[in-house]
Image: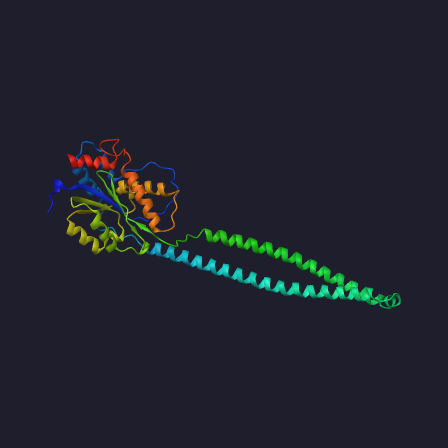
Length: 327
């Protein structure tokens, strides 16, 4: 069993979903439990204990309702299904119209061919035969003009139908684009040392939303240092599962669950997540292997970059950690 004095102060973890987006304009942050670390008169252990006390919530506070979130997901799925059904109906209707137009065009070509045959037959007649069939020819010409007018009207109607169809398709695509659709999830576990600001690792879980507490525990058993004293995390289901409680008991560290809807309580980890999002905003990857390579590049760059939040400004997390171990 390790003595408390030999243990590292704390590490932070976050189970939030990584949604890469452009950084928004920063706003002034309100008071949060982590502000106790700004008091230079407190030792780190005293500040950590105050942080633990400030992060606790009344035991009688009910768990947040998940029914609203489930209802929202169900509503989005229903909306998406309805839009997809509407899209299918629009596509089928367009296909039927095209088949109908093909038949109309074939019939028109037959009419034109018959008209051409009539003209050729009339021109082959003698003058006397033409005089005899003059009335029949006039009737045929009038009928032909009427057919041509019908054809022009039909083509104008097709133009209107095409424009209406394009408008419906544009409207449908706009509504579909407004429905959030997630095709694949890759979960990233963030583990940051609160003392040195080192990111210990960024393991990937291709299982996405199906990541289990056992997967998290297996990764942490490799990552967490044996000298660990505190572990701060959000209130994700992975960190409240029996498997995680078993890890806490076996490794003998204090597990701190931050307050609900207060990500600032785990400010060091959340700040790291924001930095990671900003760095990934203009990156692209085709699979989890390429993403893992990008994350390793970011990890090396981040841990070797000077950090202003350290007790010795200007040092990188790696340099600060090396100095601590040499002390």
